[in-house]
Length: 223
Length: 223
Image (cartoon, rainbow over all chains, first blue to last red; front, side):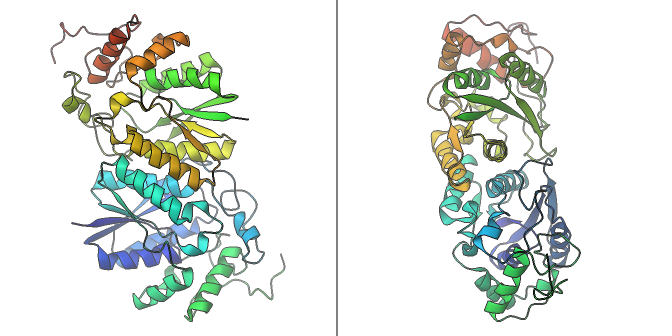
């Protein structure tokens, strides 16, 4: 029996991955990681999304301060500048995906899953080294060899863009209003941080209505 | 400047690795992981060893129950049977080394280390999949690619035996009486669990006096 553990942040990509995996696997569970991210609000969304899909959901809490300081872990606030390489670079959390994959692998072994799924996608390749295909391939090898072939790494989005993820998600009926992306972590999406801008842009280019109530319009906002 | 973070359990292998790294790197730090192991006594040894070598030492505490139950994480007590494949198999903690390497990688990035060192050795290849050279090679790739080439994995013992580790350690002046191996986790080494037997055997075949006061002789012990 195929049984996949989806790393669920509560954002667009991992929520679409969850919907995608429910079609392709016999059983699906979800794992979120609390690593002291400033945008912990996403963990609430992950919980709601898991409830909506009626799949098991666990949150693993890591020691505070494990990762290097970045805009996401207690450094400067997430940038409100445009969605550019320079502003996004501030949101890199060094070493995060290998930690997430390794932890999900340990949970997968403990609970009898056959696969770990992560929603790394092509839009992140330029900036996040641990989203690139060559990293994912090495992590896949390490996970498989380290578990005697028991656990596979599933990365169906590694060569597609966020726009394509949203398009596939619409056909899967994903309720995007449940998802949360904002790196500022407020109750509503701010609308002006780099991730909110990426979110808006992805809906726009996908030709899909954006269901997100944003706090600010970009035109109205002064930092 | 080369700066290595040594994964230090407090046992023979990682303590020898620490002594080895002090020769080859400009700076050395140590990291121990508290994963709820039954033999938490090893963490005290790790602390003493780091103090002896006057190197920084951090302990990272993972959520209890992360790893699958084994003789080391709250399952049956560590086996007192001979040091055989079957008895050692009970001490496999699935997925452990990838988690340890990934976490050490995140700490290394945070604190400016260039290398992560782990003391996996050839004696463990048969039983622990995550000690084998092919696993270590994949983990090395994943760590390097995931950190944009910033962090290397250093595994100088991957092709040598525990006997050879002890022999090299003696020439480095390692104080083996400070190290702790017993999987039963008592104040003194039990002398009859599989790891104590491995420890005795390694000193014997290395031709090095074993400085360990054991609780039981094998002949006297009835399970």
